[in-house]
Length: 359
Image (cartoon, rainbow, N blue to C red; front, side, top):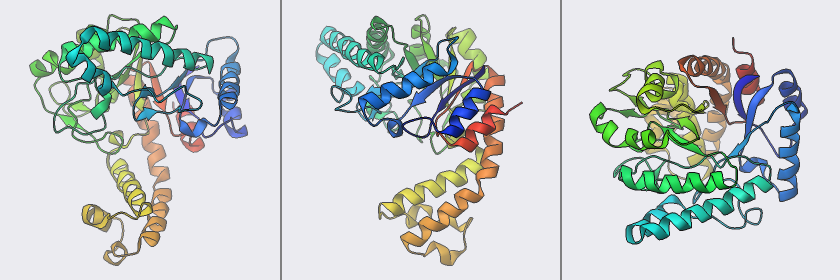
């Protein structure tokens, strides 16, 4: 078995995926909205995935935190589950009510996932909320104080475990301070170790005693390792194991996130941001014209949205070989650093083949 959790491309396995997973036994799978069409289809898909390796359990994950992070929505899900912020607000007035309602919320949520053949909602988010930080965490956080977040996260864990689900604390050792989104840029946290141990890290240290899995943060913590993000840093992984005391399965966040990929990551991040803005007919020139000048000539930067979309897609395609090389390198680095498993979410068959063939 290779220590990878993969996303797949669609609502059922393609022949290429089936062939790949037969040759390379992978650890498990994660589902996204692109994999969800109907209740019956999801059950058929999870049965197929679990049946690939009949001699062992094949865990299946989905990001189903509630709020804006919900890959499965009504009518397949019974309801749109509330965000962490919803329960945080209740907690301010009535702690016991918040904890009871939160536990009940995750009992229902996890019960539904189990019926669909899914083992974990990839929750709870254990990151603190910080004013002025990127909204990539935002209302996914249970609050600004370690004590509050610990208290509420324990209710989530209890609800998930009540249904024999797998709690998945993230993003260890703490993502809340980031002022950029690690899907696109590399966050660098310069807070002192003492400050982090009293806040962000304290949450994970308290929850490390639970029988949970954990997902790493693609963040540089300069007080531990000034050069590498946690996912690929042996220093940070050793700190998570020895100082925070986490002994469970440690999984990388998505290896395709551009925070991990240096210059090629910056290039692809810029191109995808511009494509998204141009496709929405939104203004992109002010923020990205200087970056694009490094990729295109000045006249191109003045092109219409339609033309820029096509040019950016062409540049993305041209950078794929470079990105695949980086992906192989980062996968190896994350496992060598001490991650038990690596997560790859895009469902891109070329990327999956590259990862399966790392040495």
